[in-house]
Image (cartoon, rainbow, N blue to C red; front, side, top):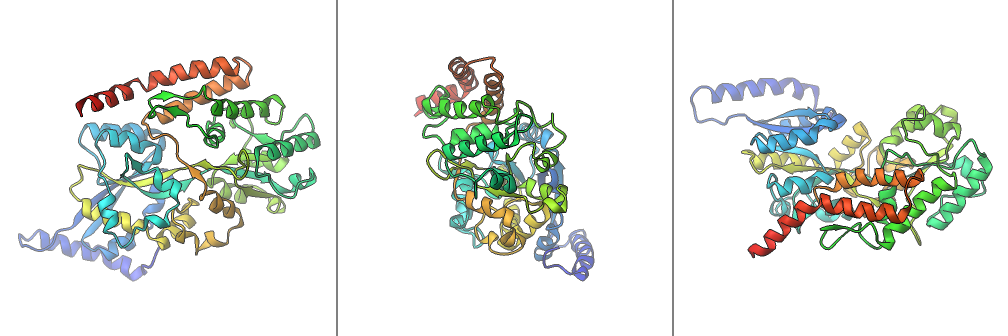
Length: 430
């Protein structure tokens, strides 16, 4: 618990009772204000450990946290917006922000940020801050950031003749080929699960051309940029550097990396804790993390994670904003990281606490300076899931690259038809 004594915790219910009593006596005294905060998954469980200090600082506020399962959260949010039953504030995946902005469900936050002594935009990693900007308006404050990079077996890389992971695609490919020659036909150099779209997405983000074109109205997967990314991805399977399987077809990624079934794995910060916990003690010095390689030098990665948003229908926006400010403090973010393993989105939050001394987090700190946002359209997750299916057909040899990207562009154009219609009507109304 952050900065709150047991005595304070014990006194807080008495304080609330006193406030309620004053409010219920017909007097003009202050009333207890209840904030409704929706959060997802493990973050919802952990944030309740941080709330008591906020309530101690604001004795007239109480926060009720409702936990949503990630699998059901999107539908519940849309239902709440349609039924005018939204909470005051919410944890929102960055890729969901454009959709709720299009529904006019969120409050712009730029004016509040400009007046805030707590929120310092320049302290946030630029890539994750950008995910909250829609048409130059700010709608969310980054709460934690997810990105993906390389987890690798440092001992096997050294045995293959390399002191450190490569920084370019060509050098990385040479390392993967050398590892494959060393480990033989029954093992692999890298795991690229066919049920995950993120590795291919990251390869595409490193290209010069966007995956959508004409103001994000049409697919751009026939471009030379995406073809290069897809070709590089396919070739890792064609050369048997990666097994053609999903991550559900192996016992688990931690044990298999430990066994040397593969030496590289593209994943996110949650796996730092898992590898520490699941690999035996004698193997704890045999793995490490590294930033993503790029085409001609250090590469970019995806800017994911969750932000904190205010709902337009909230009757407690100022109080909810105070909670966002509190959760954005570097000291609170450090504690949140220690409880969850989530990465703080502010640079100063990395200067202290456990994260400042964790060797496995250093690569993430470097990578967070090199993030690239994906197109900010509500259909983006749907597009990425369809891209994964398309890429799997290419990897399995069911479709060549030319026909795959041509057909996929047509599929994406269909997904974006409503977006084009809305944008055309907006243009005509001017």
